[in-house]
Amino acid sequence: MDVQSISKSYGVGPLRQVVIEDCSFSLEAGKLTVLIGPSGCGKTILINILAGYENVDAGSVSIDGEPVKGPGWDRLVVFQETALFPWMTTLENVIYGPLVRREKNRKELTEEAMALLKKVGLADFKDKYPTQLSGGMQRRAELVRALINTPKVMIMDEPFRGLDAMTRELMQEYYVRLFEEHRLTNLFVTSELEEAIFLGDRLVILSNRPAKVRKVIDIDLPRPRGFQMLASKEYLDYKREALEILHEEAMKAFASGSKAVVADFIEAYSEMKGKSVVHGKDIP
Image (cartoon, rainbow, N blue to C red; front, side, top):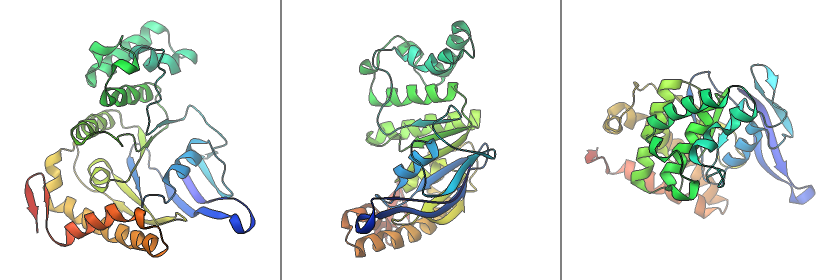
């Protein structure tokens, strides 16, 4: 996927607000690209544009040279809130997309779905409805539902937001293992820097609103990934570099009056400048 100089604004005249301006980046096939930026910078609007839910004022978005003109099966989004059909079981939710497209028969899809559900620990919950699943289980079911559709680009819009810390770590492990096995092109959006570096092959850092790409950092950490990596010098170097940029952008938001935007980044930055603890180890 290529994003070329896109801009997006809302309103007219003196009420016009530019949300995204001259924003460009690309997603490398088979890689996991993570998009991060200050809260409120326009990440979700950018996701809506890539998914085809909204049009741009200028610029273009394309996949394999073909312009994105609307929603399509070549892009699937896993949202912040669950989007499972409440009247369907876990298995029915997973096979629904390819079944209605008549790509395979129900028997083939069921076998494929069960293999995926087994990998994420949900095989025994195939007949349960979404309301009978925990938040983490619903997230896993949605990952499997996206994977079975084999999209060209999988878009993850802060999918683990709102989960407790332990469940979030578990979901990160499931997600990174599934990615490393299937190698679909992924765009993962997050506001959590540790999550971004742990998951990604490439980090795209957005500026404060109006959003544009401030810097792209290639994350050269070995796969398969494990949480012990969070105490490595290489990981900490990437974190310091990204925090410097995020801190600058957060301070711009603070100066413009958006004080709530910067709290998380100032706290994280202050810890890195002094001392912090990552999985029981002090960071000098």
